[in-house]
Image: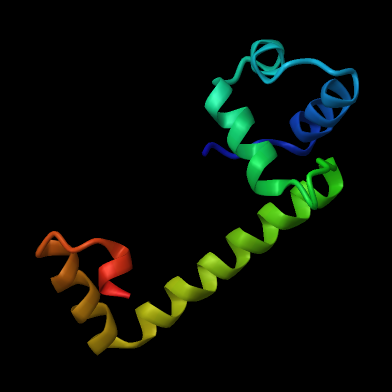
Length: 96
C-alpha cells in the first residue's frame, strides 16, 4: 500500500460520509482502488474510518517497523541468519 497524506485521509473520511463508493473515492483522489480499500480496511477502528485515527495507526506501524529493523542491524548473527534464509527463498513468516 502506498503512503497516503493526511489530506488524502481526510478526503476519504469526508467522501465515505457522503456515501461515495470506494471506486469513486479512488477516482477522485487519483489512486488505485486497492489502495483505498486497503487503507479503509487497515485503518478503520471498529468499522468506522477516521482520518485522525488512520494517520495515527499508520504512524505507529511505521515507527515499530523501523525499531524492528534496528534490532536486526545491531545483531550481526541475527542479520546473517535472516539474510541467509531470504537467499534460500524462505518467506518472512517462515524465517520469523
